[in-house]
Length: 332
Ligand code: GDP
Image 1 (tube, rainbow, N blue to C red):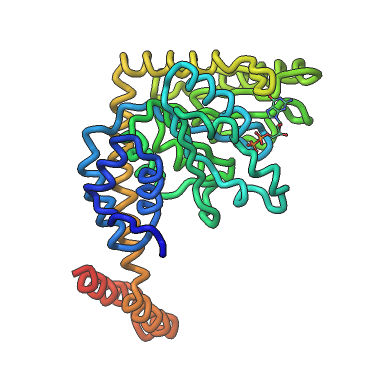
Image 2 (tube, rainbow, N blue to C red):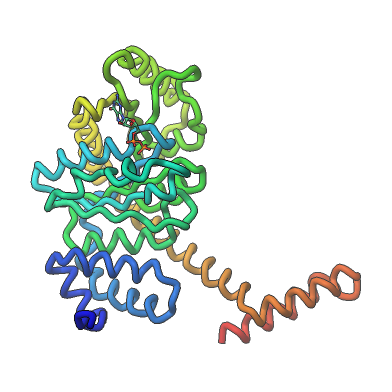
């Protein structure tokens, strides 16, 4: 007989999360990712209860192409912060969704050392989600981790284009990892992504790669030089690190601390978070509207109207009116 588990009411989850129960935190995140209306209702109620405990962490987005060294960096960076007594929440990509035929044993060791640290909670986002590990519910996961008392939240995403923009919209500091060498120094990094970065780190600056890393650092600085000044008033920095040798890692944290201090002083930090809240509302509305447009009754009617429109038997504007009335009725 399976052990009896208490019902996961918002009150039970709240108590568990606030007392540092990792299992309940993980289950709440799973619930946030669920599409079931009953789960969504519970999460809304839970987040409302937890809201006063949220917002106190520094939210850091970390991106870069597969193989750039994200997980190795997060491991040593997280360990550094954990040693300082900080509590770290890592929202990471599931390696099985990142690598097509990667070695299973290799995948299992991703951030293994860090995951054993008592100050650290690692949450891989489930396979099957597109957008480089980011989901619409990553924001809720951030709030849940904050309520659980994590001081630093690291949100990893693989460079698949759209995911960077989404993560940028939910973090305070956006860190781009790049590789040195291999021909064109800033290979594969789209200009738009560089423009989003508050800091760039050239990884694997060790051994024979040091010279190439320094060159890539100079190239990135040069590229930044021609960029418009960001709204934060913060001048993005370019650093080099070696995760395997543990070099340059502290400087990354120092950069983020400087950023936080500067932008809190200027007021940008708070304004940016307020803007992000607004953005969240916009996205939620768009999501609801999208759901409504995919409601079976609406879809059926839309298909019927489409046929008439194609045959020139109905004006598209008229069809839109009919559809709009139905959408309003369906929304109740
Ligand atoms: P991710 O796909 O971006 O998460 O990259 P990983 O962290 O899995 O690293 C990809 C490969 O680069 C692995 O074989 C790592 O051992 C190696 N790697 C990561 N960081 C460093 C580093 O600082 N120096 C060197 N030489 N290799 C590194």
